[in-house]
Amino acid sequence: MNKLIVISYQINKLKNSVKIRGWFIFAGFGLSLLINLATWALIYFRLFTIVKDATSVPLHYNVYFGIDWIGTPIDVFVLPIIGSAVFLVNFILAYMINVRERLMDYVVIISTIIIQLFILLASLFVVLINL
Image (cartoon, rainbow, N blue to C red; front, side, top):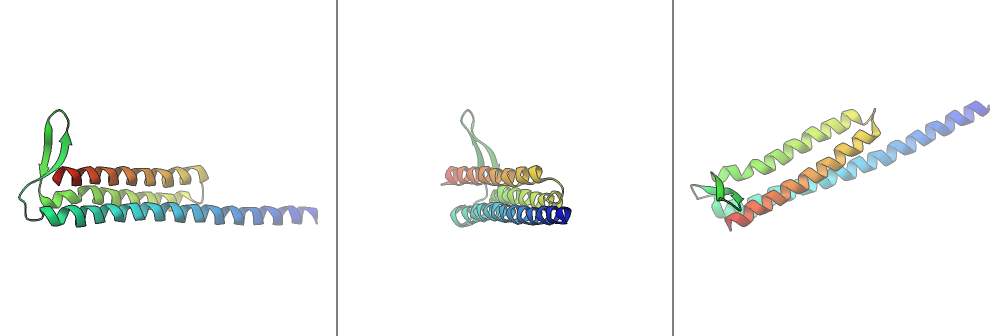
């Protein structure tokens, strides 16, 4: 009888752990998705509406050389596309890892948020170059 109580306790503990992890995964990827959508909105509404008729758009600025990467107006969407690809790959990876490795699951989620923030920052700099 005592072993049955211990097993029941362990099962309940595991269920609660999965609920907390599920919430963390949902919140982490939800935040990452919001940052990705903000990047798309920033590029489209703030920059693409201004430069869509231009033939060339500065995409990178270096302090030493000035503008060193020029592309077409469609090229401004490279950063949000990379952000979306990183989000999808990491989401699938976290889903596959979720069952086996807790720590790696958290690392994937936190790294996704950090990568999305850097892509948002890079997109902001691209917008500032073109204003």
